[in-house]
Length: 92
Image (cartoon, rainbow, N blue to C red; front, side):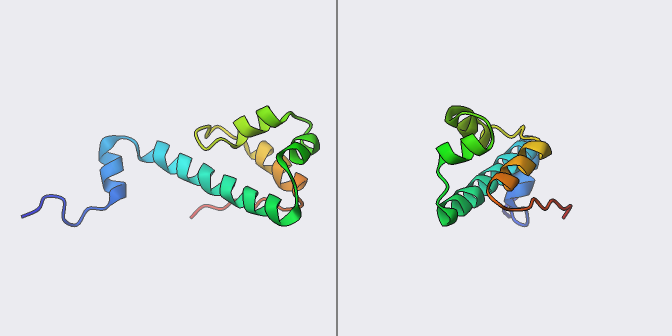
């Protein structure tokens, strides 16, 4: 009998001790993809968004890097406002 039958990838990551980290990176990647779509739809370049956020393009790229999962809610609020959107956060 296969000892892995019935488990899922989340179980594997939890046993491996990496579930939280992988989940955080996945959420950040999703947010970055959503932001890229919004920017494309509205014709907002990275330079324009950086100016709206009073930061430089390099700092913005660091902020949006999926590996950097330490983004604050305040930062997300500023980004949402800068692209004309509202931030909605919920527990699921």
